[in-house]
Length: 404
Image 1 (spheres, one colour):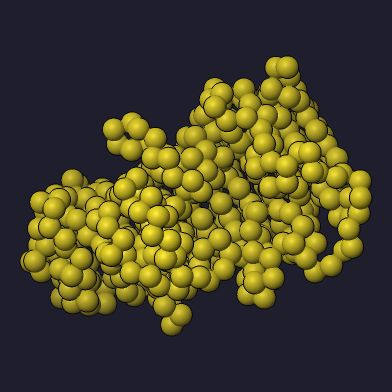
Image 2 (image 1 turned 180 degrees about the horizontal axis):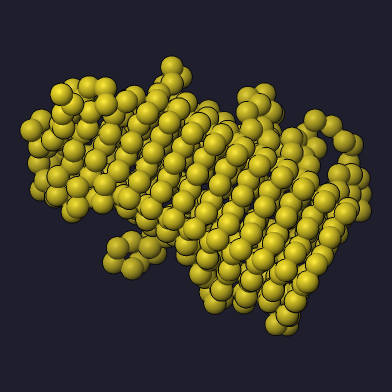
């Protein structure tokens, strides 16, 4: 008979003070195929833990896995971050190993708390590796994360690398504000980042971030092209987004990004619904992307357009280049490092923002963005619509309002 492994039976204490890493790991190691490790109500302080194939981690109502906040509890490992393998602090929950994993579930109504407001600055100050995440999974076939609340990573909250057949449904993810309402203040703190992943569904989630809420990636520059695995067949549906910068494709996309669909989502005080972005050096292509039936209302005046974010709906091949350095005319040689963007559709979108362009579309002079469709768009921004170095732009039923 399949059994549950209650972490308290392996020595874990729900006092929010005792370090429970070893006890939780004992329960995981004892768990057999198809069985469940169960976290009961209470606050369990822990360092990095490692999940394995064919298991469920279940967090009961009122259960909290709380990151210890001490760097010594998150050993340095080699992991993927920002497009390359490098030394990284371990994440709170880890699914690692090139041998691959399969059929892992993280579910329940409890909370996974990375304690990033405390741990992130310590990792930056110590600087032995890139910051960890709250959940990190690599080389995994069949991963389901459902129902849980995920909070406060030292950097990205939920990072997937080279995973297939992933379902993320009904989770609440907070990576901008602490539970007391104070801003965490961690830079580059994305929500969910699928990288080099295939067949991913992100459904009916709430995601709050101070950076990209979702960022679809596939490696960076030469290293990403050499690894050569695209992120493709990804659906984001029925989600609610708060703060941050919406759903991004890129800018680290050197293995390719294709067949992406974002539908039936709402964005509140987010700078953008859509950012499709790359820059010279990346190579490869972002293609066949659809954003449909989404709304954005942004009243946050603390975020204005910049080299990182140029519009509520934007396609940008000068991502990260300061405005005064952008040369829209001079062509560079076309090489394997020249990125492309094509076949991007924005349909049935309503955006109303106090910052930036309502719509911004800009390609490279040597590699225009191609086949961009704007269909039934209601867009209001501080500035209107900018289009440059773009071929085959189709506009149907556009209502544009300019605040300046």
